[in-house]
Structure formats: C-alpha cells, structure tokens
Image 1 (cartoon, one colour):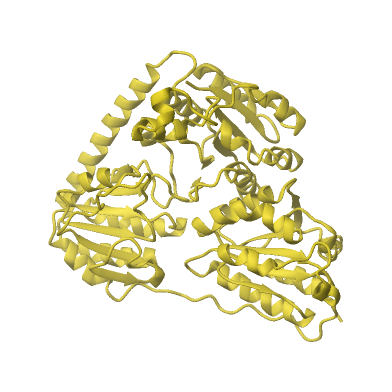
Image 2: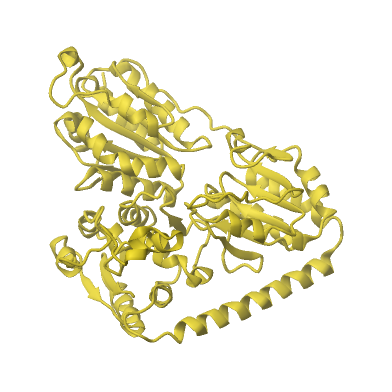
Length: 543
C-alpha cells in the first residue's frame, strides 16, 4: 500500500504543482524523502521561511496556479507570518504546509511542537491539522479547492511527521470539479443603464485582486463607450494594459484626491474587490453623494466592503463585462466612440511624451527617483514581468509604468520582504525575465532571495533604489507635520552608519552586481544583465 507522503506527491502533480518552496527541518523529513524519487518536482530552497513563502506567492501569481510551500514546525511558520499577511491581502492562492511533531507524543508538548493551526488561522482561509494518513489526500484536495476559489488566499495544513509515513488504503481522491461562473444575469441591465450616461462621466475602477484573464472583458467594456479606467496605486496585480487609450492612470491613496476626481461623475463601476485604498486617514469619503455605484465581482464577499452598491453583479468578470459591452455597442454610437478613443489615444501620447521629456531633462546626480525608475523601465527586457514594492515608483513616473495583464505585481499588503522572493518565484514559473523594483530598506528583509535566484539561475534583475533612508516615512512625517520633520531629525529612519554594502551582499549570495549612478550606466547594466544565465543586482543611488 502507498504511504500518505506518496499520496501527497501524486496530488501535487495532479494539481499542476511543479515547484515546492520551503526550508526543511526534522519534521519535514518524510516529505523530503518522498522527493528523492520525484525529480519532476523542483524543490526550491529558501534560506529563510519568509523567503520561501514569498517565492511561492510569486510563482502562484505568475503561473495562475495554486502555489505550494512547506515550512518547518512552529518556528518556521512564525518566521513566515509576515509574508503570509501579505499573501492574504493580495488574495494569492497558496497551500501552506508545516511539519508537526509525531502525534504519539503531542500530549507531552515535545520540542518543535505547538498550535500550528491557531498560529496560521488569522492569515488562512482554512486551517487544519491532519491526524490520520487516510485523511491526507482529502485534506489536500480540499485545501487546493479552497485556495483557488474566489476570494482566493492561503490555506494551511499541519502535517505531523508520523502521519505522512502511514500506509493508506484505497485510491487517491479525485479533485472536485471547479465551479464555473457565467456572466451575471444582470449584465445586459448594466449595459442599458450605462448607455443612458455620458461616458466621460463614467469611471471604471479596477479592484486590486483582478486576475489577468479578466482583461479581455475589461478591455471590451472600456472600448464599448470609451470609459476612463483607473487602477489603485497599491494593486497586487494588473488586468488592464497601461498603454491602452482608456487607461487614465492610478488613483492616489488619498480619499480627498479621489473625491475631487469624481466630483462630476454620474457613475462609478467597480470591478473586483478593493479599489479605495487610502493612507493616511482622511475625513473625506471617496464617492460624492449622488454618484451611482455599480459593482461587478466574482464573489459576494466583495460587496459593501467599501461602499454600498446600487447594482451588485456576481459572475465571471470577463464574461459579465463582455456581455455589458455587447449591449452598449448595440446602441449604435460607433462613430462617436471611435472618435473618442482616437482623441484619448492622442492626448495620452502627448502627455506621455511631455512627461518623458521632463524626466529625461533631469540630469543631476544622484538621479531623482523618477529618473532612476524611468531608466530601469527603459532598460528592462521587452516583455519582462515587473515585480514592484518600491515607493520610488510613486512619483510622476508612475504614469509611465508598464502594467500589463499578468505582467505586473505589487506587494499590496504593505509587508516588506515580499518583492525580491516573489520575483524569483515568478521567474521560475514563467522562465522569462523579471525586473524586481525594491528600495534599500525593503531589500534587507529577504536578501536570501538572491541566493535562491543564483542557485536556480532565475532570470531576475534586482533593482535597488538606494537613498539610504526610509523615504516613505520621512515624506509622511513632512506631510503631517510630525516632530521628526519639524526638527529635521528623523529617528530610526536612516541607514547611513554604516551604509549597506550591496556589492558585498550580492557577492556573498552568488549574484553579479552593478553600480549605476547615471541613466547611461543603468541602461548598460541592464544590457549586461540580460546576457547572463541568472540574476543580477543593480544598485541605483537616488536623491
């Protein structure tokens, strides 16, 4: 009879898992033994558990599948909690497992044991401990199903080491058929309602959880009337191409800014989950009174979380929007819409050219954040996936960011240490180039990602924008008039004594390094990086 650990391996294969991310310990030995005879499954070692989870998160987002990560007991799960907070916020589908001590002496609270389920519960959609080998298959199937069901998110299983070594009678349990959502039955009604409004006064807002496959319906919907489309600055992923004429940029995380932007709106169409992200707190509400609020989502949990919905449509997002677009096109305003799209494209091109020229005119050293980011974007390989958690991208240059469906991800949970490992996981999933944009502070949370990237020859260009300070905090202190800013002495917000030696750090992890303090140097560093079979760290000092 097969062992429970063999059932686990077979189910991973059947669920489309190709990479297992983890950091093993003694309680994970049954799984590690099973992998000896499973060369088709690549074990990706993270030198710290947060790095392992971050890589699994990036792999899941880039592949569109459920990621799988295995941690070591209570301490390993504890080390991983910060990144799991981010995975929950970004609704990343993950099955997270951790080895538990042998069940035969759990009553005596042995070394390495603990309440793993209790620790994981706040960041998991579902958390269980498996106590019998016969339950391993069913628990795994249920875990994968829950993780990928919207709203997606991490699921946790505690796997005692003796349970995985138990013999299992009977066949491997099959996967349940995934639920299939069609278009909302109210899709046509949505189209009819919008057809009565001025398209310049209808705003489409993108939730921060939209999968790439929603793009087709989104684009068709925007093009059906020329609706302006806005994204959130802190979005975990992108489902709308930023070079499209209807793209109107990102909303600043400020409710006063949003309210002013929507002051003449007739309707707002929110697609997906959260879009109204604000920091710091403002008294203003983002939606002015009298504006119709229409909400399209693939799960009922999305409704009413941020604003009441005058119309709430549950269904497959792409199909729902495509059907609403069909209704809008049937109203025969083709010439008007074509002229509007052409005008939007022309104005967008002129604005982008003017912004590029203004940023390129900045030639001082150190580079401004805008100039440094633009150089990195221009140097990036064509079609590269962008993994971002750098506040350096929040300036004017954000209007020029490449945010293509399935090719842009942001560490939306606000947890530093996610981006670099996520870039490694994304590169392993896509086998293509990934550009990781990170600040010097964030780079120090999971620098172990450099080793994993070098070990697996992941095609990642890590770009560290180094201003030797926590610039976001200093800017907030200035904007709110905190004592730190008034005194000009920022307590605990600088990394200058000693300065971080990123060249030595990269070398210690086996990654080539380049220092680039001019636009030309940045472009040259990228040109050299793409010639290598593996990662490069490019440090760009910024003012």
